Image (cartoon, rainbow over all chains, first blue to last red; front, top):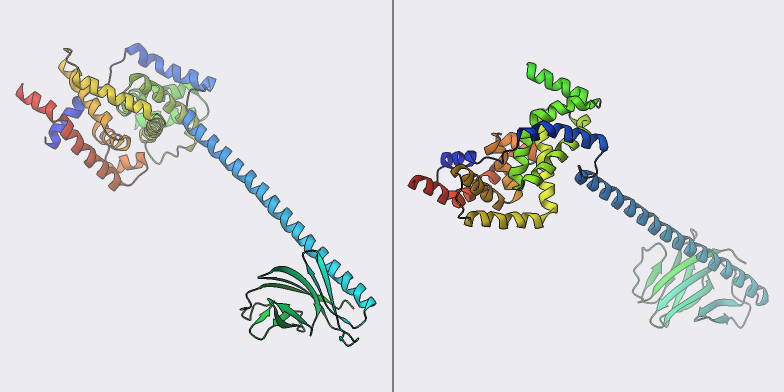
Length: 199
Length: 185
């Protein structure tokens, strides 16, 4: 079949004829539909817009709820951290009063508190540090002082605080720092925070 | 030109909510829109509903008609989109039309030659996918250029050309027996 033959055939096809009255009435049908805002008319785009608006509103509400949850959790954690620091300071201050210049470290593990004291009152006054160490045997919280030693995965490490308050944990095989500049091959996760001059 | 001025006047008045002026626009384009919606749906009653929806939508969105295209092209665009949307949401109805088309092809009842050809052409159109059908209806039945059809369909001219080419190849194949029958007569 050639293109002109196809065109000719297609153009021969007529659409169903309608009575002349239909064409006379049709504009009136449309006008009445517009005047009534007939629900059967034009539901497509309006429905699409409605669906879009609903979807947007639901998404926005979900985002708000999630943001609220996230903020709540962050706030709670932040407060908990603040509490943790305040409690650690209080504990250090009280123990230092009881055992002046003897407190080397306080280890809190599984709700059990272990106090490490020097036999003599020879522990120098220095910046207190709160450490959280998660190793092979679980997590523990350690409160100590700059210049003292703690154990990370059984390995003795020196804990130091520099003039900017950055904490450094140095073992014989690794060095960890709050600045993140040093490599950590200890196999433990360490979080540290300077408690400042508590004593 | 008088016709255009008259149409511009109707459009301007319709924008202000004049139903009578909009009625004049409907009267001018109703047959064109009915033909388009019928060729897209293959159903007289659906064509009527879609024509009504087209004019209703046009009235609502007349404020967005900037006049940079012809009013008829803008109206075509609304009608074509309504038809494509309708076909998309009613696949079951499309399948019904397909089975209708098969029935028509097997119908042995005697009828007028022109009517038989019309039904066979419509059946073939109904077998095309909706976008190819729209491209053929606009370019072949409504004599639009590929660029004009592209503007109505919201796609590139190349896409229209490809759809028309693919659709015409199928139509030639499906309608070959009709032409052969005519030659034999």
